[in-house]
Length: 185
Length: 200
Image 1: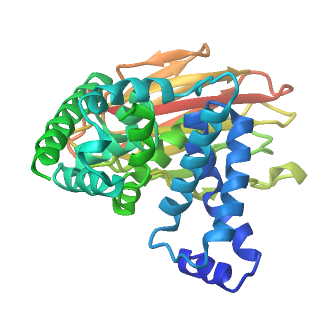
Image 2 (image 1 turned 180 degrees about the vertical axis):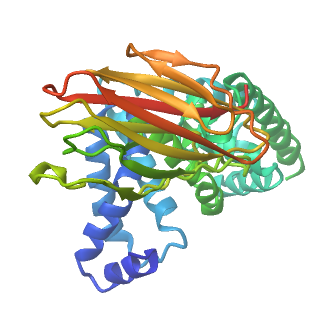
């Protein structure tokens, strides 16, 4: 079923939309959640929460990319789950490594330098827009989808070492970009 | 800003970027779960060859590689009993990943059989080599032959790797003929072979 039709079903409050989105993107969302939580069962719970949230947010939303929209909700749910877990155990997946890598980007940067977070997000979007398509994908696969370097390497046809190099350089560039732009804002 | 906050903030990047990377993510997902295509079929009593025409293509993310896997035509000869129907032969398309897994099955009681499937793989310069790995081999042997280069490898043991399965063809297609020979017709036979292509 086309995404536009699924969204229409949501707008019509037809629960067939839920079944359709679950069938089409359930596996996709579960994989995102699994990458973050490292748990099959928790991932499943995150997907269920996502379906509920989709039902509550469409309408009023009419997402341009339903997969990305559902994926973002799942991602947030998974991050919430990890954060709220009593043991503060992070995902057995890639989350810990991803966070370690991002530490370098965030350490010299303060949210206070740019009052609004959406401004920072706009800067990141601008930065991503300036990257080559391949670097952009490697970055998103790592820091949005939380894929492992091995998975990214297979997906994009690079060696794992090259993936790490690309990520390292991109993080460095992002740090420099944010520092430069935050100074000018 | 903590890295957790940054990670969460990154969740809100433009959906275009997320969408652009989705095919790569789904390819990684398929690879993780294993792409399995049933290329054999149950029910042959005598030794004949069933040709499952498998056209595979995996499109690597940046357009360097396309591999299409398509089990389409499957021709059978002779008469068959109840078990001879072609079951679960599906068409599958893999994108963004340079690996194809072929599963071959045999579960008939009778004379030893030979089944084969042809996997047609499109290669680009960026992906100059192919390798094959036998991940499962029960009650059978499996041979892989690349038609153009005449390179042939036979697996007698599971978990064997045939790293030097280079298809030095001028054209962009390489044809891998995968043949399963059942050792004992009284026993269920199964084989899984993974064909990979890569850059290094």
